[in-house]
Image (cartoon, rainbow, N blue to C red; front, side, top):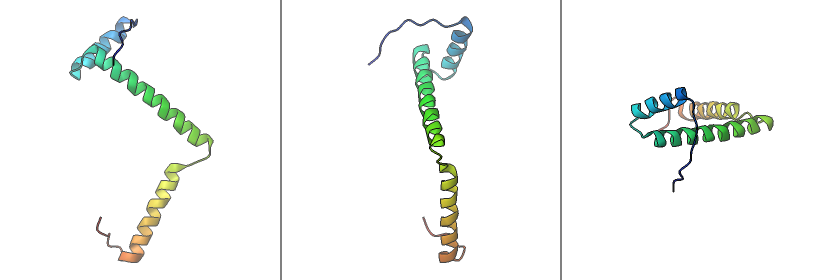
Amino acid sequence: MTAKVTLSFSDETIAEARRFAKREGLSLSAWMDQAAREKALREVFAAHAAAIGRAGLDLESASLADAREVGMVDDLLFGGRRRAA
């Protein structure tokens, strides 16, 4: 479902949006819809990352530690040869 809305943008913003839409083979409306959706998702992901940080979780370090452990187990079990995936 789509909704028609009236929005106001600066001349510069519209010119750039038209240029990007044309480059991507999209209508201005489709490009603006995509740009707004991407911005909304960035906001959600940024809020999620901030919440993870406030909770004191370091998921990147935990993931890297897990990968190191898998490598050590593989080395012990397979003598440095990687197992078949």
